[in-house]
Amino acid sequence: MFKNNHQVTSFFICLLLIMSGFLLAACSQKEEEDQHKTAIKKVLEHQFTGPDEEFIELNNKEEIQELGKYYAKVYGPYFTESGLDSFVAAFATQYPTYANDSGYKLSLKNITIEQSENTSNRYSFIAEVGCQKNGEEEKTANVEGDVRFSTKDEGKIEGFQYVNDNGLTDMLRAGN
Image 1 (tube, rainbow, N blue to C red):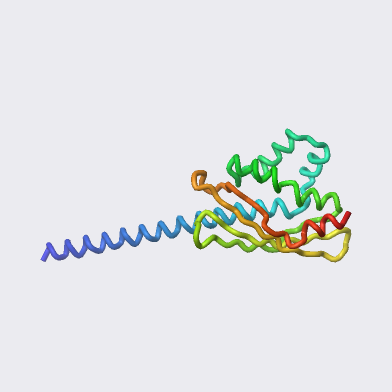
Image 2 (cartoon, rainbow, N blue to C red):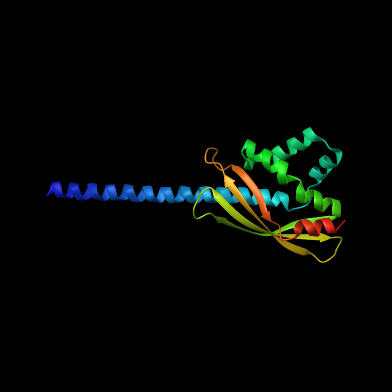
């Protein structure tokens, strides 16, 4: 009888350990997904809120070294080193500069982020962005993009690109 009780107990302990393993795996995957979504949101908040006065001041003075420090401070926590370099070269100044030059204020209204079904480190987003100039009626555009996270540097963006801004750049440029 003791032998059967011992086997039953062992079976339940093994079952409990296996279930705990599945639960931990599911939780860690959810945490990683949440960490990725948070990084994307933070980058988009910096891009589409403002323009940031510190950025404008440094950009107007053409303080390249100080601007580099600004990017490292604002975007660095979310990117790999090479990912940050690529982002800064291609996208970091685009919308804040156009908005400032045209007298627009940008505001991030809503963000939808979807993880790729085929590749766990890839995400797509749609950011609803408002732009308003001197009390005029606010205009909005949906900015779409793709983000790829590093498989080596956990939680860091390796690639970030805007795919379609649905006329936001044209709206900002036309404001000149």
